[in-house]
Amino acid sequence: MVRHIVMWKLKDGEDKEENLQKMKHLLLGMRERFDYVRGWEVGINFSKAPTAYDIVLFQSFETRDDLDRYKRQAEGFTEVFDFIRIVRKSRIVVDYET
Image (cartoon, rainbow, N blue to C red; front, side, top):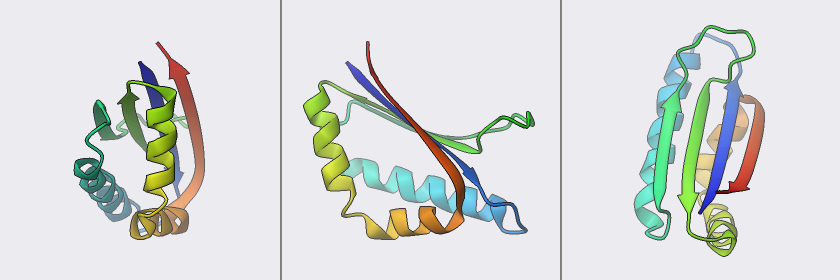
């Protein structure tokens, strides 16, 4: 099993909470297009720790090839990723096998 985790910090501002909700909605809206993704979660952080990230995408795949396939196909979702690029401050990614 392969796990793919992406976390983002969003830019501060009056619309941060609205942007978090929209981002969650957009990311969850993609999942039905990828029937080979075995697990798909999106969560908004509630921790107030200064090192905490704001939102996370957690996915599970059978193989690395499936993850690579997802990454190639997900690039086509320009509405989602263009929005994320505008509102994000930073991003981190971890991919690992279990």
